[in-house]
Length: 335
Ligand SMILES: *Cc1c(COP(=O)(O)O)cnc(C)c1O
Image 1: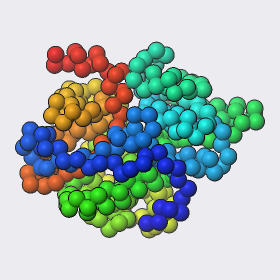
Image 2: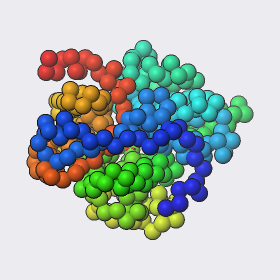
Image 3: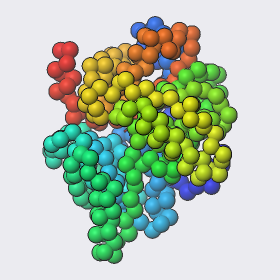
Image 4: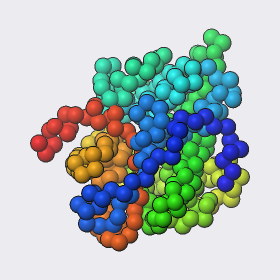
């Protein structure tokens, strides 16, 4: 695929490492576990949104934007990284935060919320869960345009066909590294949220005629609507790439058993998984996304879906700053 046809900014000067997690592998007694360390991407504290923003910010700059507007939950990695990219590019950034858990916004909370302040966000608008977030972003953009400014709206999670190009690029990077390492992977496991990562990675794998199954772990929606979301984005993304969609709907695999009570709500499995990876590999997972995905992978290993002798690759999409907004959960559960 010719990704060089799309304008791109660069925020990471290297390919993120793929590590074999020897200790975690030994501890679980199942497949060999490898991890693609996208938590080590560039911009403040890294994570998957950095790859999407390379393409999204290039588009914003090409359109002459002076301000980016985006949205997310109160502890949004995507908002933190969009703001960080705006800082790098000399643009302003305004955020619309959705209280998906009622009354969850605290102006002085730690984690990503603290980083919005530290990185110098221009404005934060807080709206109730379930409200028209896209409408609110448009309202903010219209107000800025009326003042003669040039706003650019980035959708939640950066998950449109432009942002998802970042994960097509990641799939190609990963395939190249695995070839260099001489490792033949049997399964890829990743988090499926706003779907840009899942759709981009799967399109990149299939578009390169690599037939490695990709398993998505949902952190929010039920399997059916999440599958539709991912598959829909695969279609728009392949159109952008001028490809016939290389993804069949049945290749979009989503498990929804690890969401618990809902988006960003802690589960025992998440806490156990985050602790286990910290204590075996000294790698920080996050409470909202990768911790639940790791809980899912561990359970699927126990159920024999991923077997001893196989090689699995876990995509670590970042998020560790959110841990610092969840210290009570970790101190209280399983003291
Ligand atoms: C946003 C996010 C995800 C999910 O990626 P999507 O592209 O939104 O599906 C996974 N992990 C972390 C840490 C994230 O911030």
